[in-house]
Length: 560
Image 1 (tube, rainbow, N blue to C red):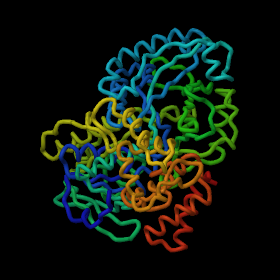
Image 2 (image 1 turned 120 degrees about the horizontal axis):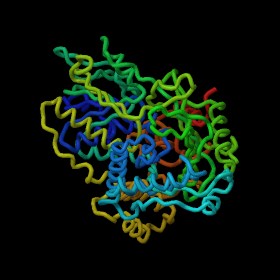
Image 3 (image 1 turned 30 degrees about the horizontal axis):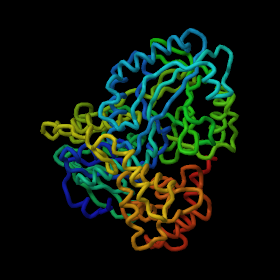
Image 4 (image 1 turned 90 degrees about the vertical axis):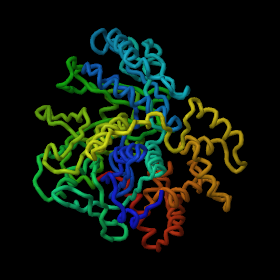
C-alpha cells in the first residue's frame, strides 16, 4: 500500500470512494475484485472513527428473533459465515451465555425455543468455513453452571442460561487493513489524510471530487464516473459540499460507548439484562429491558453499550467522565459480580451511529436497524453520486456487494459475478482448514529470536503475511525484538506499518496498525521509542516528534 497522490490525480476511475472506514474499505475491495477501477480517499486515517470504536462482535442475528425479522437473521448468518470463511485468522468463535429468569420472556423455555429457531435458520452456518470456526448448536445450561461461570449474578429467579455461539474480530483494525490490502492487490488506489473539499460538476452530473492533502496542503482533483459516499457520520458534511439543495434528510446521530476493562468474565461472553426500562417499538414481543454484553477479548473485557443522542462535532467525539461512570454504574447494577470501578477501565471506544427519532419522550435512543443505499439521482436528481449508510460490522460485505451492484447498473454494465464470498482476504488462504496447520507449522519453524507468544500474535494479526513482516528484519535482527515487554509487538511491525501500510502519524501505528495501544497507553518509554523510529523514517524534527507523542496521550483522556 503506497500513498501516491500524483497517480490519483491523473486517472479517471469507475468509482471514487469518500471515506476509508470499514464500509469504504469493503466497497473498494468488492469493486476492485470485480473489475472496476477504484480510488479511495480518507480525510484522517483508515478506520480512525466509528470503525475503530466497536465491540468487535460478528453476530448471527439471534437478537432479531424478538422482531420476528427472519430475513435479517439470514443476512447476518450469511455475512458472519462469509467473514469467517475469508479471514479465519481474524474471526474467531465467541461463546455467549444469557442467564434465564422465571418462565416468561426471559425464561429458559422461551430461550430454548429461540435457540432451536436460530439453529434451524442457520443450518448452513458452517458451510465451507475453517473447522476451528465451526458453530455448535445452542443449548440451555443449568443454574449451577451459570453461577460457576458468572459468580455474582442476581440469583432471585435464576433457573439457568441460554448458551449460543457467535464470532468476534480478533483485531478489527487488521480486518479493515486486510480489505484494503486486497483492494490494492486488485488495482485500487488509496490515500489516507486526503480530505474531499468539493465535487467536480460536468454537464449537470458529478464527475469526481476536489481534494486536499491534509499533510502537505496541496489541492488536486480525483475524477470518477461514479462517486460513492460511505462516509459514516460525515455524510451530512459531504452532502453539504454539493453546493445545491438536495432532498436527503440529515442523518441524526447517536453516541455509542464501549469500555475496555480488566477481566470480568473469562471464557464466555455474558449478556445480562440492564433492568432499566427500554421500549423497542419495532419488537412484536418486547422484553422491556435491554442487554449489556461483557465479552472476553485478548487479555481484557469489552463492556457495553450505552447510546445517547449526539448533536456535537463529528470530528471531536469522546466520552466524558460522567458517561464512563454512568456505564460502570449500570453494569454493576445489572451484574453485581462485576465489581467494576473507574480504575478498572483501561480505555474507551466512542463511535457515532445513525439513530432513529423514536422514544424521545422516554429519553431513549434507538440505533437505526437497517442499512441504506441512496441513489441521489432518484432522490435528488443528482447523477453520479451514491451514498451508503451502514449500521453494523457484521453485514459489511453484503452491503458492499449491493452497493457495487448499483455502481455497475449506473455505469450501464451488467454486474460481474460476486466471487468475493469465496476469495480469501490478504493474509488468508482458500483451502478449508489451513489456519490451524499454518499456525502449527509457523510455531515449529519459528526463528530462535521469536518466542511462541510473538509468533502466535503475528499469525493471528497478519495470517500468511507474517513472513512479509518478518522480512523487514533480514538486514536488522534487532527488529525481531519486542517493542516493549508488556506486548508481543515487534519492531518489524512498526517498520511494516510505516513503509507498507501508510502509517503517517504515531497514533496510526500505536492504535490501528499494531496492538501496542489496545490496553491503554503503552507508556512514555514506548511512545518515545516508536516516535523516534517514525522520526527517522519520515524525517520529523524534535517539535513534530513531541507533538505526535502528545496527540497519542490525549486520545486516552476523556473529554472535559
